[in-house]
Amino acid sequence: GERLAALRLCEAAALDAMRRSLDRHGQLTPIVVFADGERCETLDGFKRLRAARALGWPEVAITIADVGDVVEAKVRLAELHQHRGLTDLEQGWLIRSLYRDDKLSQPEIARRLDRHKSWVCRRLVLVEALDLAVQGDVRLGLLAPRAAIALAGLPRGNQVPAAAVVIRRGLTVLQTERLVAELLEQPEAARATWLAQRLESPPAVSARRTTRTPRGDADGMVTDIATLLRVSARLQARLLGTPLGALGAPATELVLDGLSTLAPVLTALARTAATVLGQDQAA
Image (tube, rainbow, N blue to C red; front, top):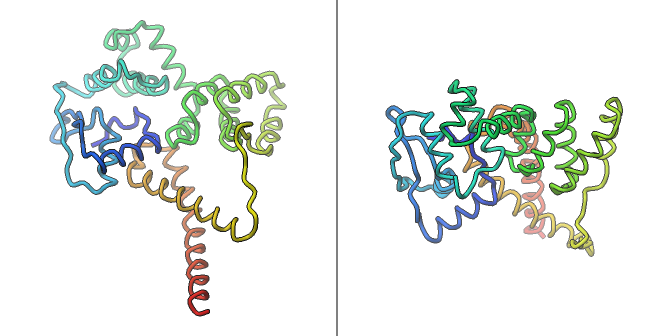
């Protein structure tokens, strides 16, 4: 099971790299699990598990951690990543789960995690201040965790439209921090208009990156086909490797809305492609 998956990020690029590694080298490290009633729940190795599922593996190697309950499992999760490190958001999700779901006090959480209670308080405030839709963008890989942390400095009403600007324009973390600073300088009544103007601005392009202009219709079609092949393969891997329930309700709703819009477009494209291929064969 993946009961604790909501506490971890699983970026598509890392998942794809894990899938390639498993396909080429096999499973080198067992997945760490813990007993939860009659089933095993994943403690460490979510990417390995999802990649194995995407490859259609019928079984994986596991090692069972000796933990007494879910609370102890969450503490062990933090210990397992003490050196590799969880992101600030992942730490916040873990602390919020212990605080809200398991009803531990902040001093008790600090004691169990061997942290100062001010550290626990800061992480809890971070995730509680960040809009759930923005957290959903992070889980979907649309927004970098550090960019989301920068957006947490905004009032909740500004976070979602500001995140849309960051995603639409492809802003870096530094650019996101500048966006937040500039937005906070605006009068509160003018912020929505200011963000709407930024949303309509062209996507940010790195000075080191050059855009190749298609030489003609054929070149443009080939470029679009290559883009669709790459993006569709990545999306398929994400859909197969990540249970929607692990994303949380806001992110799941975003994915389902997107898929409902995408499905008829892909169907229409498939019909057009079949028509074109049929015309070519007839000619």
